[in-house]
Amino acid sequence: MDFSLSKKEELFLQMIREFAENEVKPLAAEVDDEEKFPMETVEKLGKIGVMGIPIPVEYGGQGGTNLMYGMAVEELSRACATTGVIVSAHTSLCMAPILEHGTEEQKKKYLPKLASGEWIGAFGLTEPNAGTDAAMQQTTAVDAGDKWILNGSKIFITNAGYAHVYIVMAMTDKSKGTKGISAFIVEKGFKGFSIGKKEKKMGIRGSATCELIFENCEVPKENLLGELGKGFKIAMMTLDGGRIGIAAQALGIAQGAMDATVKYTKERKQFGRSIAQFQNTQFQMADLETKVQAARLLVRSASFKKDQHVPFSADAAMAKLFAAETAMEVTTKCVQFHGGYGYTREYPVERMMRDAKITEIYEGTSEVQRMVIAGKLFK
Amino acid sequence: MNIVVCIKQVPDTTEIKIDPVKGTLIRDGVPSIMNPDDKGGLEVALQLKDKFGAHVTVITMGLPMAEAILREALAMGADRAILLTDRKLAGADTLATSNAIAGLLRTLDYDLVITGRQAIDGDTAQVGPQIAEHLGLPQVSYVAGVEYDGKNTLTIRKEDEDAYQILEVELPAVLTVLAPAFKPRYMTVSGIINAYDTHEIEIWGADKIDVDEKKLGLNGSPTRVKKSFTKPQKVAGEVYEVTPEEAVGLIVSKLKEKFII
Image 1 (cartoon, chains in turn red, cyan):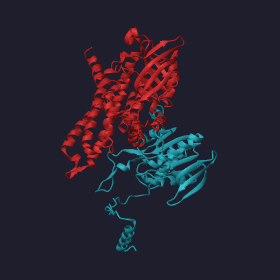
Image 2 (image 1 turned 30 degrees about the vertical axis):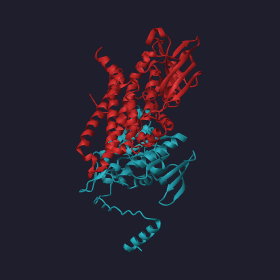
Image 3 (image 1 turned 180 degrees about the vertical axis):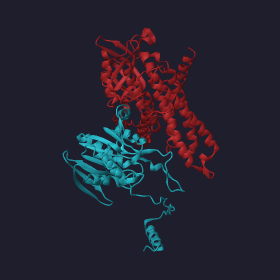
Image 4 (image 1 turned 90 degrees about the vertical axis):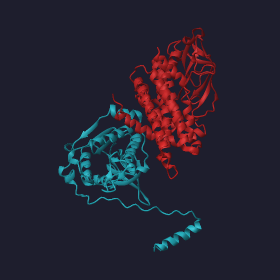
């Protein structure tokens, strides 16, 4: 067993770190403060291939691994969690289901433009009355001969408004419960599709989170993704992969807070010495560092399993559960190490603490992750 | 157009420490990077490739570990990479180094040779100009701007300390490039993958280059290091927060104190 990165992965890490440090970090406070979607950064990410890392070259992607994709989300989130989730939702929630469940025509039509970053992707499952209980879908899709007619709404949709392609779940047969849910590829500009209210959020404030509205929305027949009635299964499989992205995002936030706090505690002097010289600081930071490294091993192990095409559902759930709770604990304690300054926006840990919270909630709450893990344990 | 860019692997001097007793660089644990001016030179080549189409070869002389910067150059967009590594080259000063590189260049087809202005470990700025002399090529050093007419002439902005010159040079020629003028592009993800999965680094020994062996390595190096030492650190200056009027008086009195005026 080998825990080291290959030289190729090391070089990739060098590149994405340089990019995050020079292009992403300087904008992070502004992105948060002004709730600004970092479009310029997304364009730059497209140019260097980060919008299509694990997509095969034949579909316009980079032919990279999920391990590299996770490393990219981690490093971007270390500088700016908003930027991290834009890449994560785009890659895991939109491109991955098209790659894994799409027809050859769908893959050829959508993946090259998404993987190059020319288009941004999004995913719509959650509804006002269907959160963790995702089976309670009320959005419907009716077969109208040559097209599908969608009605209903989705909420809390990451990248909404900026995305060109949305993977949308809708009921095609209410009598069949979860087996009556189907997945559709909906393009921005389809008749009857519009973007609703934009949420004002605690953290990841630069990412656009909006409602999707379908009013007799016309979706071409060929835009059914996967088989009829397999939408719920596709959604669950998609979220398994998505959890690797969110776990990597949480890990990045935690690492970013550690970086800032190591620097601050070495500089900040109280009682005649740096606060890093106090044993309380050292012991607490040692515990946090240990948890961050443990989270990294879980994230990389889940990514590795996905790359090996072996079951990784519980691994992704454990990675997300542990990384998200680590991010919350690390950022909360890092604010404490900064004292009063940590509560202000002069230092990045305040933003990181707000950003960390969402990782315990979206793409399955921590409770859902425990359900997934327990489900495997007691099957 | 065939462009050859000479690059060097150097310790990242922003992270380097100096042994206070021996006065030498402590290289242990210091990351190795592509010399910044050389990276600027590679960027010049890649910009010419983007605009006019060019085949870009990167070459380096060094230890086998210098392969890392060649992979980085390929990941940025270079087409071919050659590592010149041989025990016979060890101990080379700038003259022996430039002889070896000129020997390598004699075996390649090129229209333009680009080097960095200087390497951050030695700071001599000699190798680029020496290569040009060995090959009998025109050279422009301290390059901060390059325009190409698409045929045979480059128009160069050459930076001097307090002025600049606009020069024309006919190809083939040697340029030595300043990093700050050319922000290097990022490697691309597919570039990184191909740098390892598709490209091969060509490993060359001294037998493959066109040069008299006596001119290589320690034997070909007239330079001898007499002593290396650390410059004594200056003490921190004094900071005054005063109005401009007070500042004038203060500066004049300080200069008088030091018998400068």
